[in-house]
Amino acid sequence: MRVLIVGGGIAGLTLAAALRRNGCAFRLIERTSTWAPVGAGIVLGVNAMAVLRRLGLAPQVADVGREVRRASITDAEGRRLITASFAPLRRRFGPTFALHRADLHRVLADAAGADSVQLGAALHGLTDDGEGIVATTSDGHEERFDLAVGADGIRSQTRSLAISSREPTYAGYTCWRFVVEAAAPLDETVEMWGRGLRVGLVPLRGTSVYGFAVANAPAGSRDADMLASFLTRFAAFGGHAPAVLARLVAADDLIANDLEEVVLPAWHRGRVVLIGDAAHAMTPNLGQGAAMAIEDAFVLAEELGRHTTPTAAFLAFDARRRRRVTSVQRQSRRVGRIGQW
Ligand code: FAD
Image (cartoon, rainbow, N blue to C red; front, side, top):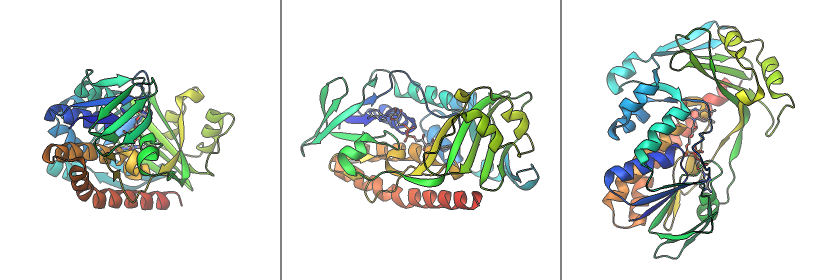
């Protein structure tokens, strides 16, 4: 089966890498003209790492990542509430890594290969005539495929063209992310819980720190002077927060977005299937959105190799994924609600 992959994010690139490994023909289209991953840092849990290991990519991730050995939750002043050692998890399932998203993208893009990847091509139209898919891209190009996979993120065009017009729903809190160089390396991952506000600090390689901060806010609210209002909002946080936040110099250092979810009754229709955020974007409270996208990609590639029709492969994919993804999405939502109290 010849596969169209729409979107070269974590889901699309992992699928491309897995299909390439399985010898399955594909074309990946990505609307941006250069690889410019949105986001700052990312934590790859043991389940994401298990898939990357099976794709032969774990050593490359380890090379650019920093192992997460323990994580604490503190109050806003930095007083420790709980610390979890990752050692028992590591013994059973292997290490967890934190890394810059650009580095993860590079590893995945290399594994996907350049031959079947087209940058600067956005999906515009998708027609399923029962025998195949005809896809139209922004450059006017039309091409036929046996099936299409929408890996085009939370505002998926594939989803709205072929599966559902449902819009993402806002979780009630907004987020800022950044990566800065700290004066000295941090020794552990920490999430600090204030009132309706949280700050997370995740050490990356060297002295780099990935930071995130969340606040209860109406949807779409943006401050005129984003950096100044961000620093004021989180000024009461203690621990390492003041030193790390002081490294922010311009509003461009911050990536701001409202946190949203996608919940769909069906992830596939006809010859089109959705994976990753396009299918089930979740709040980031468990750090599992990308892990679920990576698992999706691996399972879909396996099922496409096992079945002779897209429908059979999609049904098998859904059967293996739905309960797990729904449960993780729900737990993440619950942790977020508690954290935002
Ligand atoms: P995306 O990364 O959104 O990629 C979609 C791609 O499709 C993009 O490259 C886009 O340009 C392209 N595209 C869009 N439309 C079109 C079109 N019409 N034609 C062609 N291309 C198109 N997950 C974790 O596992 N660990 C974490 O630590 C973690 N932290 C997070 C922190 C925050 C604050 C947030 C918001 C999320 C976090 N996540 C985390 C979740 C993770 O970021 C997402 O689940 C993951 O990036 C989803 O990948 P994706 O490939 O499905 O979508």
